[in-house]
Each structure stands twice: as structure tokens, then as C-alpha cells.
Amino acid sequence: MPVPHAYSIQHSLRQWVQLDRWTHPFAATLTLKQRIGGDGGVSSAAETLTPEIASRNLRHFLNVLNKRVYGKAAQRFGKRLPVFPVLEGGGGKRLHYHLAIDCPRDDLLEAFPAMIVTAWRTTLWGYDQTVVTPCDAGWFTYMTKLRDKPDFASSIDWMNVARH
Image (cartoon, rainbow, N blue to C red; front, side):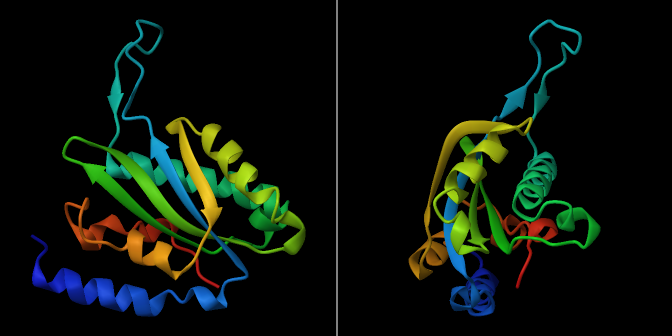
């Protein structure tokens, strides 16, 4: 059962992120490997996924995607795609991200979903299960649901939020 303040946080978030200001929002579900290593190779110790590792992996993914979309301007001038990421899972359920991510240009609309999937799969923790579709307000309502989040407030990956 969610704590009462989770409802007020949820309401505030839904007011704060206004998809009508976005150019072409996409909904993405990006799953993560829950464990890597431990194969007896050079690094035989297995590493288990944590929310901090997931956030670093998402930051790497966004850096790669921003560079593909904006080229050198991504690094030189800090050009970033608007994105709102929410981490779900834990307690026996695979950790995964739900994102609203904006495609800034009409000429990228067809290629953008494949760019997201390709960039995600190049990350160390990126798992093959990905879904990318056009986004609407219903997606943001789904992303900000209270279930499947041990602590709603900390499920928002604020380190990787980028707004218009």
C-alpha cells in the first residue's frame, strides 16, 4: 500500500511533465541484465545490478543516443534529448526502465525507435527486451503508477531527467 505522500508526488509529477510541449514523444521500456560476469574468465566475480548501476547505465545510453542525434553538439554544447525515466522492479521482479523520450526532428521519426534499441543494446547492462512506441498521456500515467515501485519518490531517476 503506497504511503499517502506518494499520491501527492504522483499528482505533482503528472502536472510537471507536460507532453504537449514535446515534439514527438516516444514511450520506451528498457530492461536490464540483473547480473553480469561470473563466467570464470578474467573477471570471475559476478556483479549484481543495483539502482545506482542502472542509473549509470542509463546515463551512458543517453550519452550515446544524444551523440547519435546531435553529433558533437551533444558534448560541446550539452544538447540533450528531453527524457523522463522511471526505474521499476526489485523484490523478485526484473529491474527495468520506463521512459518518455522526445524525438526532436521530423526526419528522425522512422529511425528513432531503432536508434533507441541499438544504443541500449550497446550498454553493458542493456538486455534484449525493449519496446519503443509513440507516446501519449496514457503512457505517462502508466509510468507514474504506484505499484511495482518499492519507493515511488526514489523510482524517478532524477540524475537522468532532461526537460525542454
